[in-house]
Length: 397
Image (cartoon, rainbow, N blue to C red; front, side):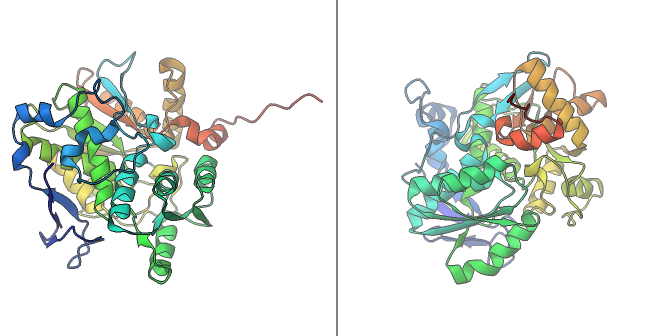
Protein backbone atom coordinates (compact mmCIF):
# COMPACT_ATOMS: atom_id res chain seq x y z
CA UNK A 1 0.00 0.00 0.00
CA UNK A 2 1.39 3.42 -0.90
CA UNK A 3 2.01 5.68 2.08
CA UNK A 4 0.24 8.99 2.51
CA UNK A 5 2.57 11.53 0.95
CA UNK A 6 0.91 14.59 2.46
CA UNK A 7 -2.32 16.47 2.84
CA UNK A 8 -2.89 19.12 0.19
CA UNK A 9 -5.16 22.12 -0.17
CA UNK A 10 -6.42 22.17 -3.77
CA UNK A 11 -7.37 25.82 -3.40
CA UNK A 12 -3.90 27.25 -2.60
CA UNK A 13 -1.64 24.16 -3.07
CA UNK A 14 -0.33 24.28 0.50
CA UNK A 15 0.74 20.93 1.95
CA UNK A 16 0.58 19.52 5.47
CA UNK A 17 1.84 16.45 7.27
CA UNK A 18 -0.55 13.56 7.86
CA UNK A 19 1.38 12.46 10.95
CA UNK A 20 -1.06 14.32 13.20
CA UNK A 21 -4.75 15.22 12.88
CA UNK A 22 -5.53 18.15 10.61
CA UNK A 23 -8.67 20.12 9.94
CA UNK A 24 -8.63 22.93 7.35
CA UNK A 25 -5.83 24.64 5.45
CA UNK A 26 -4.29 27.13 7.87
CA UNK A 27 -3.59 29.58 5.03
CA UNK A 28 -6.92 29.79 3.19
CA UNK A 29 -9.36 27.63 5.22
CA UNK A 30 -9.81 25.32 2.25
CA UNK A 31 -10.63 21.61 2.56
CA UNK A 32 -7.64 19.26 2.57
CA UNK A 33 -7.20 16.21 0.30
CA UNK A 34 -5.16 13.11 1.09
CA UNK A 35 -2.38 12.57 -1.45
CA UNK A 36 -0.53 9.27 -1.93
CA UNK A 37 2.54 8.15 -3.82
CA UNK A 38 0.65 5.98 -6.31
CA UNK A 39 3.60 5.07 -8.52
CA UNK A 40 3.95 1.50 -7.16
CA UNK A 41 0.35 0.77 -8.25
CA UNK A 42 0.49 2.02 -11.84
CA UNK A 43 -0.88 -0.22 -14.59
CA UNK A 44 -3.89 -2.42 -15.28
CA UNK A 45 -2.11 -5.64 -14.32
CA UNK A 46 -1.32 -4.24 -10.89
CA UNK A 47 -5.00 -3.35 -10.45
CA UNK A 48 -6.01 -7.01 -10.48
CA UNK A 49 -3.37 -7.81 -7.86
CA UNK A 50 -4.24 -4.80 -5.68
CA UNK A 51 -8.01 -5.36 -5.61
CA UNK A 52 -9.03 -8.67 -3.96
CA UNK A 53 -11.58 -10.80 -5.77
CA UNK A 54 -14.95 -10.44 -4.11
CA UNK A 55 -15.47 -14.21 -4.00
CA UNK A 56 -12.22 -14.64 -2.10
CA UNK A 57 -12.91 -11.69 0.22
CA UNK A 58 -16.71 -11.47 0.45
CA UNK A 59 -16.96 -9.01 3.35
CA UNK A 60 -14.21 -6.59 2.47
CA UNK A 61 -16.70 -3.90 1.44
CA UNK A 62 -15.08 -0.58 0.63
CA UNK A 63 -11.84 -1.86 2.13
CA UNK A 64 -11.29 -3.95 -1.00
CA UNK A 65 -9.69 -0.65 -2.14
CA UNK A 66 -7.26 -0.73 0.78
CA UNK A 67 -4.43 -0.11 -1.69
CA UNK A 68 -5.66 3.46 -2.19
CA UNK A 69 -6.73 4.13 1.41
CA UNK A 70 -4.69 4.90 4.52
CA UNK A 71 -2.71 1.93 5.83
CA UNK A 72 -4.38 1.62 9.24
CA UNK A 73 -6.48 -0.90 11.12
CA UNK A 74 -10.06 -0.13 10.02
CA UNK A 75 -13.10 0.42 12.19
CA UNK A 76 -15.58 -1.40 9.99
CA UNK A 77 -19.18 -2.57 10.15
CA UNK A 78 -19.16 -3.97 6.60
CA UNK A 79 -19.68 -0.72 4.68
CA UNK A 80 -19.33 -0.45 0.93
CA UNK A 81 -19.59 -2.69 -2.14
CA UNK A 82 -23.29 -1.88 -2.40
CA UNK A 83 -25.51 -3.24 -5.19
CA UNK A 84 -25.77 -1.66 -8.64
CA UNK A 85 -29.35 -2.39 -9.71
CA UNK A 86 -30.64 -2.24 -13.28
CA UNK A 87 -33.97 -0.49 -13.64
CA UNK A 88 -36.77 -2.68 -14.96
CA UNK A 89 -38.17 0.18 -17.06
CA UNK A 90 -35.27 2.48 -17.86
CA UNK A 91 -32.49 0.57 -19.66
CA UNK A 92 -29.98 3.36 -19.08
CA UNK A 93 -30.32 3.54 -15.29
CA UNK A 94 -27.94 1.78 -12.93
CA UNK A 95 -29.24 2.49 -9.42
CA UNK A 96 -26.47 2.54 -6.83
CA UNK A 97 -28.22 1.32 -3.68
CA UNK A 98 -26.41 2.97 -0.79
CA UNK A 99 -29.21 2.06 1.59
CA UNK A 100 -27.49 -1.33 1.87
CA UNK A 101 -24.72 0.22 3.98
CA UNK A 102 -24.56 -0.11 7.78
CA UNK A 103 -26.79 2.58 9.32
CA UNK A 104 -28.68 2.56 6.02
CA UNK A 105 -26.92 5.34 4.10
CA UNK A 106 -23.78 6.29 2.19
CA UNK A 107 -22.69 8.30 5.23
CA UNK A 108 -21.31 5.05 6.66
CA UNK A 109 -18.40 5.18 4.20
CA UNK A 110 -17.11 8.61 5.17
CA UNK A 111 -17.63 8.17 8.90
CA UNK A 112 -15.99 4.73 8.87
CA UNK A 113 -12.80 6.30 7.51
CA UNK A 114 -13.00 9.42 9.67
CA UNK A 115 -13.50 7.40 12.87
CA UNK A 116 -10.78 4.94 11.82
CA UNK A 117 -8.30 7.81 11.53
CA UNK A 118 -9.54 9.47 14.73
CA UNK A 119 -8.77 6.27 16.63
CA UNK A 120 -5.43 5.99 14.82
CA UNK A 121 -4.52 9.51 15.97
CA UNK A 122 -5.61 8.82 19.55
CA UNK A 123 -8.55 11.22 19.55
CA UNK A 124 -11.22 10.52 22.15
CA UNK A 125 -14.11 12.94 21.60
CA UNK A 126 -15.69 13.55 18.19
CA UNK A 127 -18.37 16.08 17.30
CA UNK A 128 -20.54 16.61 14.25
CA UNK A 129 -23.45 18.76 13.11
CA UNK A 130 -25.79 16.68 10.98
CA UNK A 131 -28.98 16.92 8.95
CA UNK A 132 -29.65 13.36 10.17
CA UNK A 133 -27.85 10.43 8.60
CA UNK A 134 -24.27 11.46 9.38
CA UNK A 135 -25.33 11.56 13.04
CA UNK A 136 -26.37 7.93 13.03
CA UNK A 137 -23.21 6.90 11.20
CA UNK A 138 -20.90 8.75 13.59
CA UNK A 139 -22.74 7.31 16.58
CA UNK A 140 -22.40 3.75 15.24
CA UNK A 141 -18.72 3.91 14.32
CA UNK A 142 -17.78 5.80 17.48
CA UNK A 143 -19.47 3.05 19.48
CA UNK A 144 -17.53 0.42 17.53
CA UNK A 145 -14.27 2.30 18.15
CA UNK A 146 -14.91 3.06 21.82
CA UNK A 147 -14.95 6.84 21.27
CA UNK A 148 -17.29 9.58 22.48
CA UNK A 149 -19.72 11.00 19.90
CA UNK A 150 -21.29 14.43 20.34
CA UNK A 151 -24.04 15.22 17.85
CA UNK A 152 -25.99 18.37 17.05
CA UNK A 153 -28.94 18.01 14.70
CA UNK A 154 -32.21 19.81 13.90
CA UNK A 155 -35.05 18.76 16.15
CA UNK A 156 -37.24 17.88 13.14
CA UNK A 157 -34.85 15.32 11.60
CA UNK A 158 -36.40 11.97 10.62
CA UNK A 159 -37.13 10.22 13.92
CA UNK A 160 -35.00 7.20 13.00
CA UNK A 161 -31.90 9.42 12.96
CA UNK A 162 -32.54 10.54 16.53
CA UNK A 163 -33.42 7.06 17.79
CA UNK A 164 -30.32 5.40 16.33
CA UNK A 165 -27.97 8.08 17.66
CA UNK A 166 -29.41 7.69 21.16
CA UNK A 167 -29.38 3.89 20.92
CA UNK A 168 -25.68 3.91 20.00
CA UNK A 169 -24.96 5.95 23.13
CA UNK A 170 -24.11 9.28 21.51
CA UNK A 171 -24.55 12.60 23.29
CA UNK A 172 -27.33 14.19 21.22
CA UNK A 173 -28.39 17.84 21.21
CA UNK A 174 -31.52 18.70 19.23
CA UNK A 175 -31.49 22.22 17.84
CA UNK A 176 -34.44 24.43 16.92
CA UNK A 177 -33.00 25.36 13.53
CA UNK A 178 -31.11 24.02 10.51
CA UNK A 179 -27.79 22.23 10.11
CA UNK A 180 -26.14 25.65 9.75
CA UNK A 181 -27.31 26.50 13.28
CA UNK A 182 -25.96 23.16 14.50
CA UNK A 183 -22.61 23.92 12.88
CA UNK A 184 -22.44 27.29 14.59
CA UNK A 185 -23.02 25.68 17.98
CA UNK A 186 -20.28 23.12 17.33
CA UNK A 187 -17.85 25.90 16.40
CA UNK A 188 -18.70 27.86 19.54
CA UNK A 189 -18.17 24.92 21.92
CA UNK A 190 -15.64 22.49 20.43
CA UNK A 191 -12.45 24.11 21.74
CA UNK A 192 -13.74 24.40 25.30
CA UNK A 193 -15.15 20.86 25.28
CA UNK A 194 -12.10 19.24 23.70
CA UNK A 195 -14.06 17.89 20.73
CA UNK A 196 -12.47 17.10 17.37
CA UNK A 197 -14.74 18.40 14.61
CA UNK A 198 -15.42 15.92 11.80
CA UNK A 199 -17.95 18.10 10.01
CA UNK A 200 -18.27 17.82 6.25
CA UNK A 201 -14.90 18.66 4.63
CA UNK A 202 -13.44 19.99 7.88
CA UNK A 203 -11.19 16.94 8.13
CA UNK A 204 -9.72 15.11 5.12
CA UNK A 205 -10.83 11.50 5.60
CA UNK A 206 -14.58 11.57 5.05
CA UNK A 207 -13.79 12.34 1.41
CA UNK A 208 -11.53 9.26 1.34
CA UNK A 209 -14.39 7.04 2.47
CA UNK A 210 -16.82 8.57 -0.01
CA UNK A 211 -14.35 8.27 -2.90
CA UNK A 212 -14.79 4.49 -2.76
CA UNK A 213 -18.17 5.03 -4.45
CA UNK A 214 -16.24 6.22 -7.50
CA UNK A 215 -14.02 3.15 -7.51
CA UNK A 216 -17.04 0.88 -7.10
CA UNK A 217 -19.19 2.24 -9.90
CA UNK A 218 -16.27 2.07 -12.33
CA UNK A 219 -15.40 -1.50 -11.31
CA UNK A 220 -19.05 -2.59 -11.37
CA UNK A 221 -19.34 -1.22 -14.92
CA UNK A 222 -16.33 -3.24 -16.10
CA UNK A 223 -13.70 -0.58 -15.31
CA UNK A 224 -15.43 1.88 -17.64
CA UNK A 225 -16.95 5.26 -16.91
CA UNK A 226 -20.72 5.77 -17.11
CA UNK A 227 -21.95 8.63 -19.26
CA UNK A 228 -23.33 10.49 -16.26
CA UNK A 229 -23.66 10.31 -12.49
CA UNK A 230 -26.73 11.77 -10.80
CA UNK A 231 -26.12 12.48 -7.13
CA UNK A 232 -28.39 14.19 -4.56
CA UNK A 233 -26.05 16.79 -3.07
CA UNK A 234 -26.53 18.45 0.30
CA UNK A 235 -22.99 18.83 1.59
CA UNK A 236 -21.67 17.33 -1.65
CA UNK A 237 -18.89 15.15 -0.23
CA UNK A 238 -20.02 12.15 -2.27
CA UNK A 239 -19.72 14.13 -5.49
CA UNK A 240 -16.33 15.49 -4.45
CA UNK A 241 -15.05 12.09 -3.36
CA UNK A 242 -16.02 10.40 -6.62
CA UNK A 243 -14.28 13.09 -8.67
CA UNK A 244 -11.13 12.51 -6.63
CA UNK A 245 -11.46 8.78 -7.29
CA UNK A 246 -11.68 9.35 -11.04
CA UNK A 247 -8.46 11.37 -10.97
CA UNK A 248 -6.71 8.59 -9.05
CA UNK A 249 -8.06 5.88 -11.36
CA UNK A 250 -6.64 7.72 -14.36
CA UNK A 251 -3.28 8.26 -12.69
CA UNK A 252 -3.17 4.55 -11.85
CA UNK A 253 -4.25 3.42 -15.32
CA UNK A 254 -7.06 1.35 -13.78
CA UNK A 255 -9.91 2.75 -15.88
CA UNK A 256 -10.53 2.39 -19.59
CA UNK A 257 -9.61 5.77 -21.03
CA UNK A 258 -12.50 7.94 -22.02
CA UNK A 259 -14.38 11.04 -21.07
CA UNK A 260 -15.25 11.29 -17.39
CA UNK A 261 -18.98 11.19 -16.64
CA UNK A 262 -21.09 14.30 -16.49
CA UNK A 263 -21.60 15.00 -12.81
CA UNK A 264 -25.17 16.07 -12.05
CA UNK A 265 -25.95 17.52 -8.62
CA UNK A 266 -29.59 17.36 -7.52
CA UNK A 267 -31.22 19.51 -4.88
CA UNK A 268 -34.75 20.26 -3.73
CA UNK A 269 -36.39 23.42 -5.00
CA UNK A 270 -36.95 24.27 -1.33
CA UNK A 271 -33.18 24.44 -0.72
CA UNK A 272 -31.11 24.79 -3.88
CA UNK A 273 -28.08 27.03 -3.22
CA UNK A 274 -25.79 25.06 -5.58
CA UNK A 275 -28.34 25.14 -8.40
CA UNK A 276 -28.76 28.90 -8.06
CA UNK A 277 -24.99 29.48 -7.98
CA UNK A 278 -24.45 27.21 -10.99
CA UNK A 279 -27.12 28.99 -13.02
CA UNK A 280 -25.68 32.38 -12.03
CA UNK A 281 -22.16 31.20 -12.97
CA UNK A 282 -20.99 32.00 -9.44
CA UNK A 283 -17.92 30.44 -7.85
CA UNK A 284 -19.65 29.98 -4.47
CA UNK A 285 -23.15 29.85 -3.03
CA UNK A 286 -25.12 32.41 -1.08
CA UNK A 287 -26.98 31.08 1.97
CA UNK A 288 -30.46 29.83 1.09
CA UNK A 289 -33.12 31.54 3.15
CA UNK A 290 -36.04 29.65 4.72
CA UNK A 291 -34.81 26.24 3.57
CA UNK A 292 -37.63 23.71 3.56
CA UNK A 293 -37.91 20.20 2.06
CA UNK A 294 -38.89 16.76 3.31
CA UNK A 295 -35.64 15.46 1.81
CA UNK A 296 -33.78 16.21 5.04
CA UNK A 297 -30.31 15.47 3.66
CA UNK A 298 -30.74 18.20 1.04
CA UNK A 299 -31.65 20.88 3.57
CA UNK A 300 -28.17 22.42 3.68
CA UNK A 301 -28.44 26.21 3.17
CA UNK A 302 -24.74 26.75 2.38
CA UNK A 303 -22.50 23.71 1.85
CA UNK A 304 -18.90 24.21 2.93
CA UNK A 305 -17.56 22.61 -0.25
CA UNK A 306 -19.73 24.66 -2.59
CA UNK A 307 -16.76 26.01 -4.54
CA UNK A 308 -15.42 22.50 -5.14
CA UNK A 309 -18.80 21.17 -6.27
CA UNK A 310 -19.33 24.04 -8.69
CA UNK A 311 -15.88 23.53 -10.19
CA UNK A 312 -16.55 19.80 -10.66
CA UNK A 313 -19.91 20.43 -12.34
CA UNK A 314 -18.32 22.79 -14.84
CA UNK A 315 -15.21 20.68 -15.46
CA UNK A 316 -17.39 17.64 -16.20
CA UNK A 317 -19.83 19.49 -18.47
CA UNK A 318 -22.40 18.62 -15.84
CA UNK A 319 -25.31 20.50 -14.38
CA UNK A 320 -27.12 21.28 -11.13
CA UNK A 321 -30.84 20.50 -11.04
CA UNK A 322 -33.58 21.45 -8.60
CA UNK A 323 -36.67 19.25 -8.16
CA UNK A 324 -39.81 20.31 -6.25
CA UNK A 325 -40.96 18.16 -3.34
CA UNK A 326 -44.14 17.02 -5.13
CA UNK A 327 -42.04 15.50 -7.93
CA UNK A 328 -39.73 13.91 -5.37
CA UNK A 329 -42.71 12.26 -3.68
CA UNK A 330 -44.17 11.14 -7.02
CA UNK A 331 -40.87 9.51 -7.98
CA UNK A 332 -40.57 7.84 -4.58
CA UNK A 333 -44.02 6.25 -5.00
CA UNK A 334 -43.35 5.37 -8.64
CA UNK A 335 -40.13 3.46 -7.84
CA UNK A 336 -41.70 1.71 -4.88
CA UNK A 337 -44.71 0.51 -6.86
CA UNK A 338 -43.01 -0.27 -10.18
CA UNK A 339 -39.45 -1.24 -9.21
CA UNK A 340 -39.89 -2.61 -5.69
CA UNK A 341 -37.37 -0.11 -4.31
CA UNK A 342 -38.23 2.19 -1.40
CA UNK A 343 -36.04 5.18 -2.15
CA UNK A 344 -35.00 7.81 0.35
CA UNK A 345 -36.41 11.26 -0.48
CA UNK A 346 -32.90 12.27 -1.60
CA UNK A 347 -32.69 9.23 -3.88
CA UNK A 348 -36.14 10.02 -5.24
CA UNK A 349 -34.90 13.53 -6.03
CA UNK A 350 -32.21 11.91 -8.19
CA UNK A 351 -34.67 9.64 -10.03
CA UNK A 352 -37.03 12.57 -10.57
CA UNK A 353 -34.12 14.60 -11.97
CA UNK A 354 -33.30 11.77 -14.39
CA UNK A 355 -36.87 11.84 -15.71
CA UNK A 356 -36.72 15.62 -16.16
CA UNK A 357 -33.32 15.50 -17.89
CA UNK A 358 -34.55 12.84 -20.32
CA UNK A 359 -37.67 14.88 -21.07
CA UNK A 360 -35.68 17.99 -21.95
CA UNK A 361 -33.03 16.14 -23.93
CA UNK A 362 -30.10 16.72 -21.57
CA UNK A 363 -29.71 12.94 -21.32
CA UNK A 364 -30.63 10.24 -23.84
CA UNK A 365 -32.44 7.02 -22.84
CA UNK A 366 -29.49 4.96 -24.11
CA UNK A 367 -26.95 6.83 -21.94
CA UNK A 368 -25.47 4.74 -19.13
CA UNK A 369 -26.36 6.75 -16.04
CA UNK A 370 -25.56 5.87 -12.42
CA UNK A 371 -28.29 7.25 -10.18
CA UNK A 372 -27.57 7.25 -6.46
CA UNK A 373 -30.10 6.28 -3.84
CA UNK A 374 -28.10 7.61 -0.92
CA UNK A 375 -30.17 5.99 1.83
CA UNK A 376 -32.80 3.42 2.71
CA UNK A 377 -36.34 4.72 2.46
CA UNK A 378 -37.31 3.01 5.70
CA UNK A 379 -35.18 5.51 7.62
CA UNK A 380 -37.67 8.19 6.55
CA UNK A 381 -40.89 6.41 7.49
CA UNK A 382 -42.24 9.30 9.55
CA UNK A 383 -41.54 12.11 7.06
CA UNK A 384 -42.64 10.01 4.08
CA UNK A 385 -45.86 9.03 5.84
CA UNK A 386 -46.53 12.68 6.55
CA UNK A 387 -45.87 13.62 2.92
CA UNK A 388 -48.22 10.84 1.76
CA UNK A 389 -50.88 11.70 4.38
CA UNK A 390 -50.63 8.20 5.85
CA UNK A 391 -51.69 7.71 9.46
CA UNK A 392 -51.71 4.53 11.53
CA UNK A 393 -55.13 2.86 11.25
CA UNK A 394 -57.09 2.77 14.47
CA UNK A 395 -57.02 -0.41 16.51
CA UNK A 396 -60.53 -1.79 17.20
CA UNK A 397 -61.48 -1.74 20.86
